Length: 609
Ligand code: ARG
Image (cartoon, rainbow, N blue to C red; front, side, top):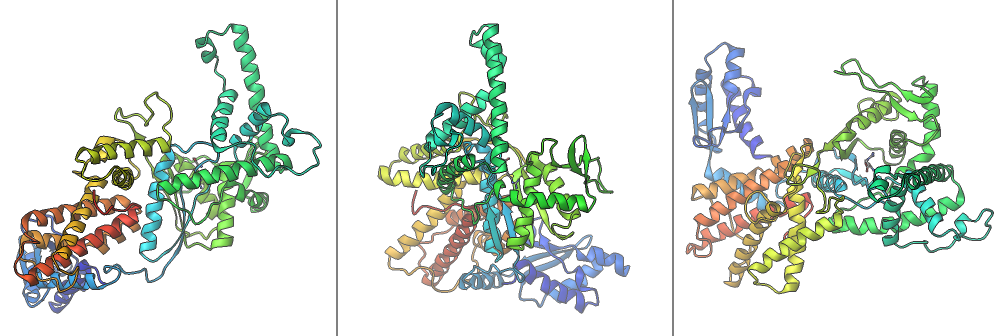
């Protein structure tokens, strides 16, 4: 369906043309004086310059022509040359009926669907999922779903960090704990066991322990009351362990079979756990690829960069310059190989691009990661284009997000100052919502638990997505779970309220959503219709700008409009049956639009709450 704004502009363009002016002046925007009108056109001002006339004269002429249009109940030319527009109730009602009839609520599919890779999640295998990864998962999932809603072929790839030092740390820690395992027997010739030498909870404990062991700090020893000698001995031990971990990482990366076998165990155990965690967030990926998958492309890509004369030696490392004439500051070159030959983050990303080009042929790439990785992505994108790994005009965008802070304005921590684990965070939110639901205890404990899960997820995701992604935000559990204000639970509450009216209506013998939506009879009703009519605009703008917060803004306003209408109108008490059917159909449409939007944000509404 055409957007309501397009319909308005069609009328404007026709009138401009009929008065002998170019059509392009017939642009409309939302009114910035909602007390005076709903939309406005500022085109007469621009036309005045082109035609050397007074803006108000042009506006007056256009308004005369517009008077015959079925779209407007009021159009006025006001000084210095604005055209104020108020939509006709019948025209808006007709638009509502078309949306209600259309299986997609009027949302058009892209005429040329694109294949778009969304790189998000980015968990690091065997390290606990912490809230830094929350944002990437939540934002990425929403962008992927927006694209899908608009008919694009979105491919979500989790791009695991699965090829780094954590693997060497785990291998060496495992050797210290279980030296008898066959992986550590030189010359072992048998089959390696099928079963992993650890469970997920052991694995989760092994990595932090190994990481601490490799980074012993003398202060810690002093605090623990160690003697100077003990501290020195411990430091030596720590260094030796770190060295072993580096070596083990290198051997793994070179394909040493026993370490590859351990690596496979780590991957299997860890992936299963990640899937569960992402599942709890209603986040799912089409591809579970990782840095390790990129490795086989690296030797050739480095050769290619060298042959093209792009890569050169600098202080023992191999680098590619990425500076471009328009840069406001000098950007450091991209390091593609370190002096010790080890694999690098940027090189893995380049290898991944080569693989994606080969396997997926994308039309565009979107990466979602912490905004502190901006330089990294600039380097990777520029090298990829310079070297022709992707076409020069390939849209590659990096969506960098800010930090989630606690109420003290510092990165969010647990009560004892540790890194907050995602599972715990979700648990805390669900518990808080559960308590709130139980305060007015109208449902069973079981139902309250189930509802708390849905509402908790909405609180968490909406709390995140309603902020512009690049901004830091404050994680405020009390505010996020509030049923009032710009929150997820408020949106759900609105949907649940509509559900409840619809089922009462059915209990009273009415049938849901039939009949015709009639022209609005009140200002509140019209306000609700106008907001519903902007659904397609909101979705498209949010996708083009990669801005889920625009959908949040849209449904917040839609919920406000619905609630205003609800408080103004007797719906179930309406005696005129035709009017009542129209109300019911309208609020059912509002509910469908709200549901479609929260689906894209990645959460859903309970039946009641
Ligand atoms: N694993 C990375 C991290 O934890 C994020 C990965 C982002 N995606 C990418 N293609 N580099 O920081």
